[in-house]
Image 1 (cartoon, helix red, strand yellow):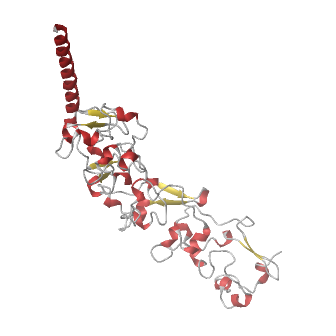
Image 2 (cartoon, one colour):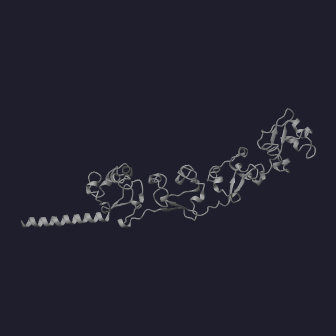
Image 3 (cartoon, one colour):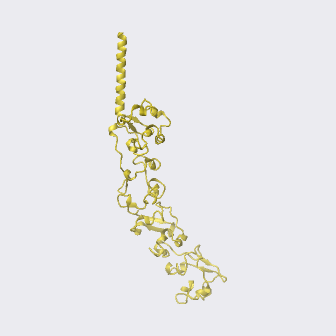
Length: 355
């Protein structure tokens, strides 16, 4: 009898110790490291009248702490489908599992007491300098899944956004395309400090015929969106400009068509090192005629500005201007200058028609 009494008392002490330990554990919270780090679950915070132990421990969660982490389907997608935490966190009984992430997830490797759980950060700074972007979660009420993790890693400082990403289906610009949300070209809507144009020279083309472009000489009231991204991508070296673009009002020539800026055929305004082609060189223009051919050399006409001939009476593209001798004698095409006054008369055939 005496031995039975001692055994009963010992069991009571052990049981009390286990229950006390369990109670302490429940009060402090259980740290989950899956499906994403880190979530501290507090029994105390979930002790409501409408919930009982059976609400969770009758099929959703085993009684042993963290046992559920061994289940292969213990992933966020299961929660979104109404399993585990998602049985209650469905947006009706409690906030939905795919919203307000920071209410549960403390961050990678965090081991904090329940009372130290950080509040949801409303402002996230993207970028380091004064030109950085202040992002406000409360102004973007979409589901967390709209951005995380497909567009942004849910960790501050882990997302590096470059100018080249603007205009592509990445990061902020998946929505800020002018359709789903305001276009990203409206810089001041996001950048807290005024964005100044990049300094330095951007070269279009190679060699002596390259054009040196400077942002500071193209500052406009409308801002970056005049050119970017419709005319030029925000990545250096992406734009390819060929001679045909001069005539089709593309790229630079949307403005440089004599309406909003200097006309494109005033070549030396942009091509600062441009020299006329040498006679007999690859740029010499050959005109085949029933008589002997005519060879036109820009170099021998270099004392005149490009605008004297282009785009009137000659188009910039070879072959677009039709020339007839009878018209020249009336002062058209070559005859505009070759009239016997400004230059020798067009009737002096041998001066141009050669073997």
